[in-house]
Image 1: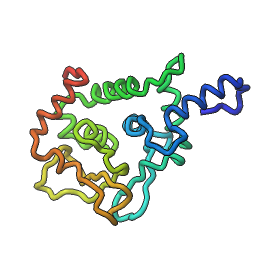
Image 2: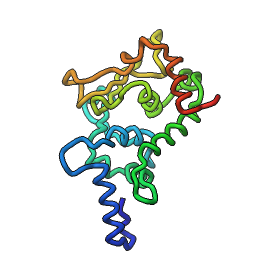
Image 3: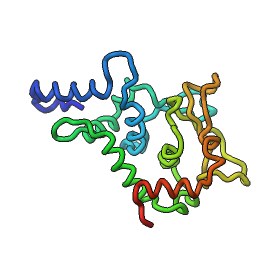
Image 4: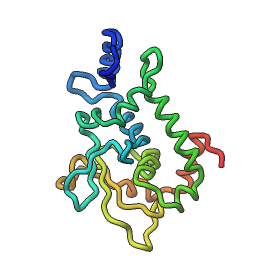
Length: 200
């Protein structure tokens, strides 16, 4: 966020600080941008092709901590996002930036067949699920086990995907598929494509 090799003025440094505090208030409360920021971060990878999250135990699940902001803000991904969510007047445009990233994503994944019949990365699956359910209800994400051969969900290579508070040692979690399984998935996906004005 701060280029220490440059001779930054006090005004520049103060502007960076003000932007940071707008995103993360100093008082102990949830920032209004937290969930939006995590949705936006899903669209970025670092030079090692990793997302902003951090894999944690238990290792028999793919269990990812997505809520440790002290770590997240030190990632190169966050620095890139930080430069893109404020305009020239230092106004926060995080919602507009997320909208743009969504439009770019669905312009590439622009049909129901592409979404459902091709193997998609965990990153892409989460982005699509985020338009169907609240994936950040409990803060963190876990992937657990392949499905049986005769079980069909949204994606051809889908794992069981959960939102959870910390790990599976408590009951504060939900499985995304259970939130949408009674819906017409093709219709729901078409609504998303229409929302972002994607023409096949």
